[in-house]
Length: 489
Image (cartoon, rainbow, N blue to C red; front, side, top):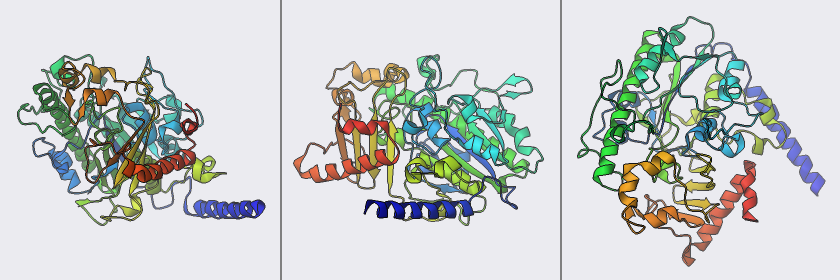
């Protein structure tokens, strides 16, 4: 019986490999030399844009782009940590398989596994011109190698806080006459907090501004305070500064699109505008709550049939690499399609075929995997979320929840924390935010702000057990080393 089952499995796997090799290739197909790609990744940007319903923040360029693209309201990072998330975006694998468990920069020094295959390398091997401008933040460089790093304009270093200047640095690369298509990876440092700037300017804003950028300022009284944050003067002040940084990004988008059109490349370039994860406030960044994972996603396929539409699919950042390779006509690495292909292949899938749909079938569930952020922040969490329930497994729940240094120091957090453990931060008390249960189960449909943990209620034990099994299957299928924690601590 076992031998018979193995034979069937081997036959099915062979069929999969044959079919895959017939429909994909590692060289650019004839007639597809004009399939350019721009992947624009902001840093710590939530769904705080005009096109996502915020009527205060000024993002006219992204709003105009959304009217010419597809907007995804249900787009989720897999981890709200910069380096870890970028490794996922550029590999199609969760960070427990990339090895980029936390920040790449010193003193944290996390590094991806040596055998990782990444998007820029795969596209470069297939004949694409590849270039990176702005924030890199994964390591080692050899695994994520781009042919060009566009960090100067006329001999002047490009500020990653000035997306207009970044676009200008990419102009020659975009407009170059070549038989090869290009892949441009464009990553701003806005609106990330900066520990080196004064409190009022933590989001990169400065009195002298940035060359080529018209700064848009906001009054704290006018900002929209989301439910997961406290409505305090301190929080409003920081949100106003965050908004200003977001408006700077918007001008960079406008400049980049202008240059693509000037070069005659806009109509043959797939453009994705997104963020590594959600907003840099406690309750979002470094957590696996929705404000940390839910992020903007605008996609314009130049060969798509519809414009200005909304797609309700639940998209995960593990889907980016398969989607871009699909657009380019490039196959997955051969190593990923060998034995145990389901477990060792990409963890995501291409959303290119469903771009023109509104409610595509089979896109109703996402997973998240977080382990570190900074080195001292060990707090592995695994998540399954669909349209009804969300289960969070806090694997190291015995530990107090660790804070990123910039979030701990934020005036938004400190203004509440200093009032004691019973003080309310958004929808949770300070104590509940720091001391977390092993399992957090939320009815997302009726409790979208994740304020009522159902995991301990007897009437929800069947639901809890069912979603635990989903997590276990996810961990097994993605070779998650932390799956062993189900049997021992």
